[in-house]
Amino acid sequence: MKQELRVIVSGGGTGGHIFPAVSIANAIKKQHPEADILFVGAEGRMEMTRVPAAGYPIKGLPICGFDRKNLLRNVSVLFKILKSRHLAKKIIKDFRPMVAVGVGGYASGPTLNMAAAMGIPTLIQEQNSYAGVTNKILAKKADKICVAYDGMERFFPKDKIIMTGNPVRQSLLNDKKIREEAVAEFGLDAQKKTILLIGGSLGAGTLNESVFDKLCTIAENENVQFIWQTGGYYYKDIQQRLKLVGQPKNLYVTDFISKMEDAYAVADLVISRAGASSISELCLLGKPVILVPSPNVAEDHQTKNALALVEKDAALYVKDAEAKQKLIPLALEAVTDETRLAELSKNIKTLAFTDSADKIAEEVYKLAMTYSERKK
Image 1 (tube, rainbow, N blue to C red):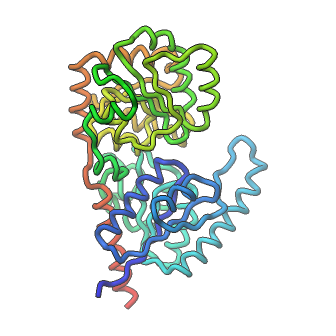
Image 2: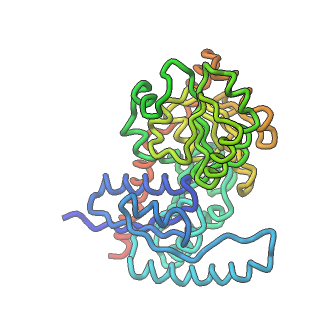
Image 3: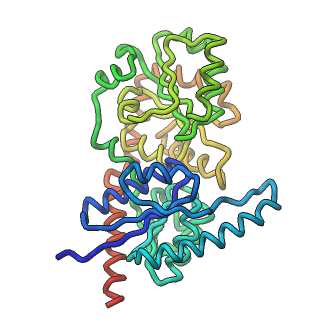
């Protein structure tokens, strides 16, 4: 009989944290079907619906981030942190995990802190090229730190670091479609070059305004077509504005793309924010990309992610502040340059990790077995 394996996975907040977390859990389950996995997330955040949809139970903590603009509001934030630590301790006592995994996001702080304090081994996965504050703090007591970029010893103890890359959602690996089939799913023209514009799971205001600012330019370039994912937050407003000004025939608009494998198969060029999860997917698929880092993230880590690729001629780059003027013209120029697209595709593919989730799952299991031996 196989020894039981109990694992807590904590974190979330955005798809960039949730997709890797679920991929790690799936890899653990694939390697050890008997494993019992519990997620711990932040109440009211995406993970509270996305994780159950992926087939895993989740507990919520009343945790949130500090308000840097209104310091008085942080009194309630401190109370929530204390309450979250208390709840995390109870969850850990009840579930009795053999290892705790943190993927970033509010909930990972109190969960992994409490796990480490209770003698349970912890593993953190840092997705970005510039470590976040929470992970830098957690790293002091973490047993293993899985990273996706070189040079992370700037932030973490070198002897704890393992280069694994970032896990990506399984559907991208398992459900690859040929371009012609995917084009039909969107009702597009297989003969035209296609630009896919995605702003992350929540959408991106700058990217959306960059399209609006150049609607006439888009309409004039009939030999190129666009798939524009607006994000649910912006979708209704964009639909209303398009009714007033007119929607170009070569512009496909949607709030959310459920089958990203189809969208990637269609795309000759991608326009994207520079979140770590998105970059990992683009590397794995070898997609030419223009990265527009979000300025609204901690430590400006998306710019650092983007420049790590630009330095290796693996991506094009437009600053957020310059996107309205430069983004669409650059995209239209790049998508018709076959030589440049081929170079970008070749270079970005060299940065891909094909088995990240499996590698992390193996490290999780090693820590759990070490803990189990220690407890005997």
